[in-house]
Length: 381
Ligand SMILES: Nc1nc2c(ncn2[C@@H]2O[C@H](COP(=O)(O)OP(=O)(O)OP(=O)(O)O)[C@@H](O)[C@H]2O)c(=O)[nH]1
Image (cartoon, rainbow, N blue to C red; front, side, top):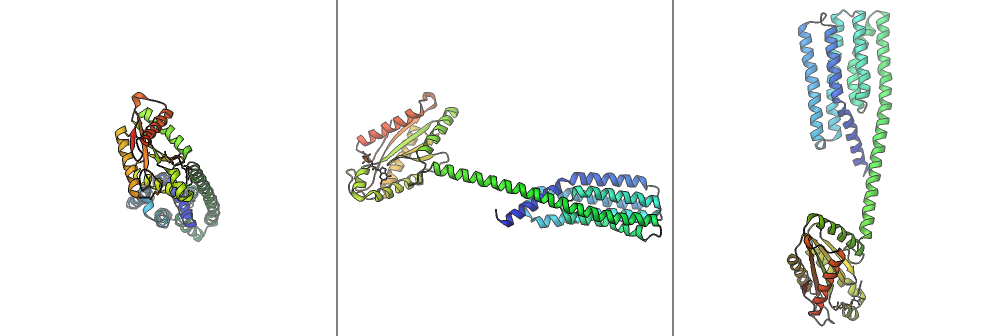
């Protein structure tokens, strides 16, 4: 994973942890709002309470809508977009409490007890925000700033030492929590980074294991499955056919007069010819689950799940014709002027289950029959 992709994943995970806090944020604000309304019911006008409660409702509902929007469309926008969106929501929540404390504070004539309740309310909300918004520093600052600071300034401006002390303590509290949030944010980032690195290392290991497995089951010359891979595929498909009751067909395909080909054109040309035969097989066998393997020397095996004997013969014919049409010159063949193949086909049906070894033996026998019948032909067991 490159650096940008890594950073983007990290950003999305930070956003995830911010969004996960939405229910508790909404519940916390709603409860504290109700408590405050109850506490100051006789102090503030009904019109203000209604207007403020409407603002609270709009703010929490829009936060909920943002959460749903993020959860369904997160991939469509950059992390920066979502961060800004949630920051706006945090600012709105901050303004909810800024408006409340300043209005209520002035309505009660900045009375000591009332202001203390407002200060405790604001500090409590800020403490909650340490946990719920530490994954986004911007959201934290935009919420806690308006919630704490205007009230602190208002307290500092009152000519009463006790209230000024509370105001100063609130500013100190803001600074302490900010420091705390910075620490939590960095721990959170580090733990997400560790998780992502671990995930990447796991993916790399799995990729490597898969590559090694593919290499260990692939024939180096022709790039089709090797004998080991074929044995595994046969075992798997055999079990599958047994369970599903569907027919399993094996084609054994062998180059004709290949010794003569090598003898006349040389071993490297023989290798090249085997590559071309494998390419012909690959171009004809494309269904998922079908296996093309180099069974040994110049012999290939094709395993066709869910294929009847007559369908297998058709496929073998297509391959035989494909090789013929490839028109690879064979100056020493007594069959044709070009390279040809012979094929043996055998199909097992679930109601007459033989062993997988018998499947190979019978397909091989059919191949010998094709050779005996003059080569360049297909025979069924
Ligand atoms: N170039 C090359 N030749 C191979 C390879 N593997 C096996 N052979 C050759 O394939 C030839 C197979 O010969 P035979 O088994 O006698 O079969 P054939 O000459 O094709 O005769 P029929 O199958 O009866 O038509 C041998 O000469 C092997 O050396 C390989 O990887 N590369």
